[in-house]
Length: 97
Image (tube, rainbow, N blue to C red; front, side, top):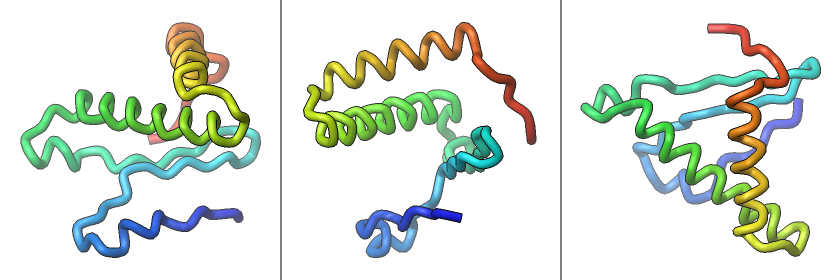
């Protein structure tokens, strides 16, 4: 098993909370999601996750741009297009709780 280390910045925050964990295993994506944390604070959970997914996309686009010498905007556009295509026509089913 090849786990990533948490970012160093979270160690200094006693309220840091893991929200999402993704694993590529057995030729599929396995996901653990901390659902309910935002609703417990009186926030719309779906809207909060939309913001999380958006921020995550920007982090991935920046990492790809830095690694492969492309612009963040180009990488964001590719991710967005792929994301919308997958939402509209999934290439695989999801299972689990």
